[in-house]
Image 1 (cartoon, rainbow, N blue to C red):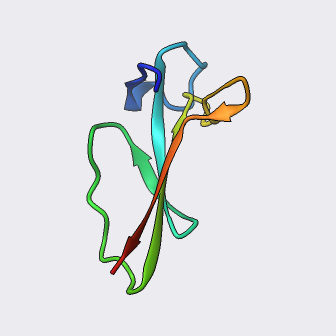
Image 2 (spheres, helix red, strand yellow; image 1 turned 135 degrees about the horizontal axis):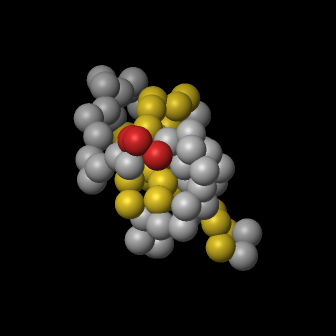
Length: 78
């Protein structure tokens, strides 16, 4: 993963190498932006739950190298 410095102040401004933030999705629904090492997830629905985290630039574009997105996905069972 790239070394990305999360900064709330830079969101929506010009893209700068090394700056950005994460977007967090649960079952395809965006929960919000992540600027630190953790995020509290609200009560999750029963059954299979898919959590996706993407790294994004200041302008919210996905970060990628050679077309490969920087993202993590996991499936939880509740």
